[in-house]
Image (cartoon, rainbow, N blue to C red; front, side, top):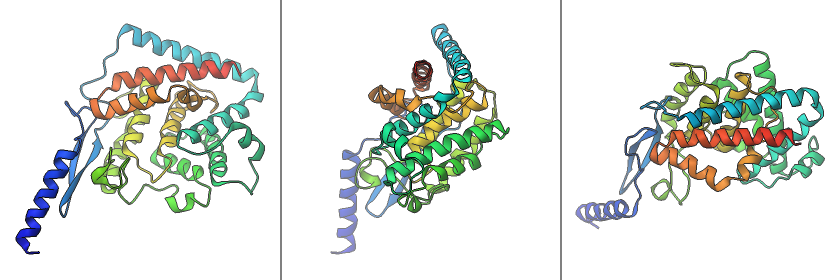
Length: 311
């Protein structure tokens, strides 16, 4: 094959891939931007989330504000309830750990986790679920001692999520150093390609500042929702990004004194609304639908608090 044949072949392949691919839909680039990565005969786009808070600024109705106030009241009632029923703290953490792991594709039941936690001869899935319980306890202790939510805390939490043999090969406690993607056999065919490794700190640095009210102070429920989605879109770790995104919510609520202990069954509540949850998260990336995401997660938090009080 001559050089001319190779160039023609590459142009045909590139044209085919352009026709077959679905570009990232961002009419106003409110949630982020696409950056093209080129390789011989092919290319793909990585999605780079925009810094928080969103621009244009979020806009909420009176009903939205009322729903947030009701969620805060539910969390206040939960705090009072948990003070008088410390015996339910551990079962609620076990339930949350098992559910969050299931949302990430692990096979874990609350009953099996309760029966095997602390044992050595368990599956990797069960070991990572136990690691989630450890992570919840670590988060609670760190924030109770006055430490802010930082990238170091996020990495320390991630390390605790992966105590399994399988997890050792997934860079526990470190940001990824290779390109990942969701769906498809390669980034070219993927449904979603998060930032390249070199772009991760450009997103995570501003996220750390946002979680600590820089450049502007943000109300806790909104901060929790935005921070959770931002981490999920960035996919900074090789694995367990879903679990980490849900733990960001717990961190923010604890740091804001809206949650008194890490015993909120948020993931168990999300399980009951999995399709709606995934669609709301996807719409943030593709449509910049931040307000809808905040509404959704506020309802999930409120329902989780109500669920916990019935335990």
